[in-house]
Amino acid sequence: MLDWEQLFATRSSRMRASEIRELLKLLDQPDIISFAGGIPDPALFPDAAFKEAYSDIFSGQQVNAALQYSVSEGYKPLREWIAKDVAKIGIDCTPDNVFITSGSQQALDYLGKLFLSPKDTALVTWPTYLGALSAFNAYEPNYDQLSLNGNRTPEAYRDTAAKIGGSVKFAYLSADFSNPTGETVDLAGREKLLALADELDIAILEDAAYQHLRYDGEAIPPIMALDIARRGGIENTRTIYSGSFSKTLAPGLRVGFVIAAMPVIRKLVLMKQAADLHSSTINQIAIEHVASRGFDAQVAKIRAVYSKRRDAMLAALDKYMPKNATWTRPEGGMFVWVTLPEGMDGAELLAKSIATEKVAFVPGKAFYADGSNANTLRMSFSCADETMIDEGIKRLGRLISNAIRAAA
Ligand SMILES: Cc1ncc(COP(=O)(O)O)c(C=O)c1O
Image (tube, rainbow, N blue to C red; front, side):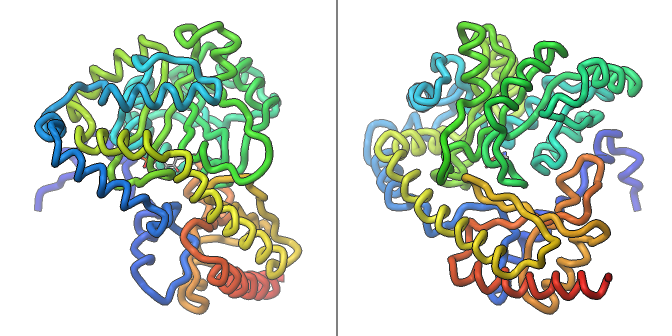
């Protein structure tokens, strides 16, 4: 048999099957209560609005353009709609600063490709979005822990990067309701990050996939908005903002976007021409059709449902979890992050949980660039109703309490 490994490029050695993908298969088993997949509840998709959108496209003049190749930057009316929508949160930009991607996952791949030479350093939070690590891994970077409390000096970051043989290129983070922890970076943390990025002279990749899903608390301006305000305009910013319609409208259409200064956009356009020419024309038109007619109402609808599920999960954790477990209390998004006592292993617990309790979650270790913190779990509340959440957390609480007792 051919030894494929010796033919594959060295970058392929860091491409590994994602634990999350494997786990998503569990969702097909009807008797499992799953807190594993970080996906939207399909019952909340605006399917009637999409049906109308596609029907309008096919019954009107637009059909030929919708089925044709189109420009790499993306569908202009959609870029105009996005520019107007983000203006509401302080991101003052032109439609030319908006670049459409096939999901925001593609933005992460492109940005990894654009910035990272082998051995360069990407600063990421500990933990971070697993899909970002997968996207960046192909470009053979080094990861260093992004600290937002100012306890690492710029020199420390620079020295570590130089020892590896590259330089620090960007800091990647989700400032609102991050995947996996559900946590939000406060205003002071955002300002500190901008100051650190200034000192290191690096880009900031702000992943805003969950931005619209706030259930309570005060909205904090995006890092991009703060950067624009400080610099007097988008062309002087160092932040690159990525957004997505996956969590608000539907992920299957694969429509996301990047907002950045023109030098970055121009490079991304060239990359897209080389990679896939453009994102699906018809899906971009359909997204614009649905967003321009009812985006805010759709967001209000999903917020109402997810906030109740978030409340149910927090209440169940309070009720059933042993005292020595801790968890985040997110103000939005889809996730609660649970930390168990040191020495416990989320992966072992998952195997037991599926076998005896029929409850799934994601072990937290995969979200750490260094594979540490095996005693953590990511729990998603987006796809289970309140009764299932109470029952699932009850079973999990029992399992964890028993495991802690057995280890004592
Ligand atoms: C933080 C974060 N960024 C990006 C993505 C990618 O989403 P999409 O490509 O569907 O826009 C996800 C998906 O779960 C995510 O959680």
